[in-house]
Image 1 (cartoon, rainbow, N blue to C red):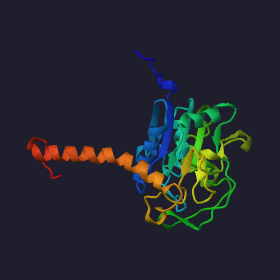
Image 2: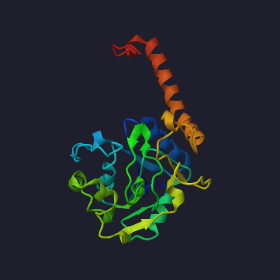
Image 3: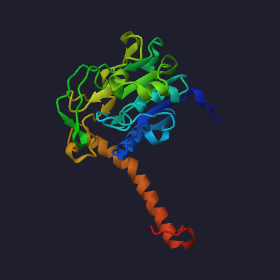
Image 4: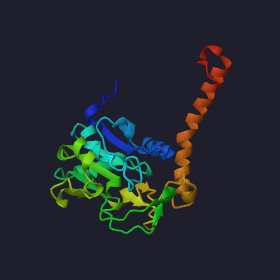
Length: 256
């Protein structure tokens, strides 16, 4: 028998889940499956799943349902080990374990991010939402948490802290606690020049599932992954539907 994979060594990857971008979530998951070289634990950050511990209402500047809940990752990881968080509008082009390795080089850092220094080019993004502009913009869209050093991020704190306090990492003692990841691990489509060596592609203005953003850098690649993610689901549903239609005992009293 092969060597047993211990649960405590399995990498946890949390993905922000938004009901406006369900297909983006599943496309991101597929990209992880395609590139991970070892098993990983993939966990959606869904607002309905954390409603018992996250009590704030969604603010006008929160462009996604997971704008703030992403900071619950250390708590949901029991403040142990390392965990990755990514927005759902990304696709991996390399093994996510490699991303975690960069953070683990220096265990003194509480969180590691790509430290972007840019001003968004547009005033709007997907679904005509206002493009907010602030210091450390998009640092929190891809994060590797050293969970033990993030105990300030309790559910109570995340539920009451301001957006800037969370996204500008004011919950840390200083910026010296933030490690830096290579820029290839959060390539901002539409903001940066094309980078064929990007390891993680981030459709920060909007995933190609939105008609306004269907023709942009890496769109064809995103659609390829999306088709792969949805093809098996469609085939399975079709098979199940046909079986139900042919067997009245499986109809559950409904029409498919």
